[in-house]
Length: 320
Image 1 (cartoon, one colour):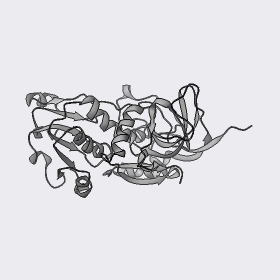
Image 2 (cartoon, rainbow, N blue to C red):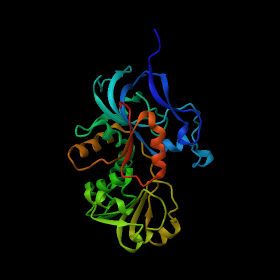
Image 3 (cartoon, rainbow, N blue to C red):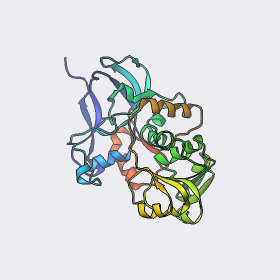
Image 4 (tube, rainbow, N blue to C red):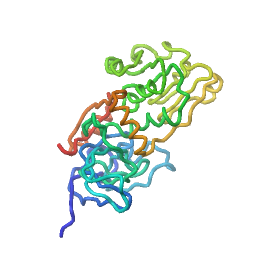
């Protein structure tokens, strides 16, 4: 009896998007505590293109020791098809989504993917698989920042820098859920209607108006872009929460009485994802999809990502 196969996108050499090749490979099998998911859609995230380039933007000592060929992708939405030994919380036919094996290697750009059972949550009933695949990494990054790392320390007025992107558009909504009274979104002008539609109270087009000249005395800057230019916006005793590495001039921040939170790495968590799914299903959080590409066109999806100025997330349609 032959080995079962599937289609997947594999990276055979580090480099440009064209190194991502659509081909037939062996189908994985779930091990103890794992679930096999028939993937309907897969999200595209910054760590995917960092990996594609061999993590060249990381310090050498921090680069994961990954060797091609690789199947990238940690965000999936699909249907459980098989269970590994010891799995009792899922059944074949369950619709699930998840951030799989992060930080670490996952294989979401494929028709089938194996996931630890604990990394999955029931897919939100109000979302299709395409929208659900746009949630896990970006949504959990914002959710874990707001409800775990900053719990009880959001304050009344919050700036979200890079508010239209994957993490930013979730953060702009979740700080409101957490109690912020005024949310200021900073992005380029074309995102104004989008962000106001998400409930942002005030929009700042950084291409026209220096954000640092507009808002003052905010309690929290949640920064998805990186840098220090918005330090003057934060009140003495306020805080900056960076989502990515950046130069936040800690000495200057200390002089201004501003706390700079340690950057936190998002981690796979089915329970956190279930909490986020509940907010989505009750209409308190909306999901934005920038663009959708067939799985075989993953290279084009990465090229779109490199052009930047995303409005939400890029998703691969695996079933299309």
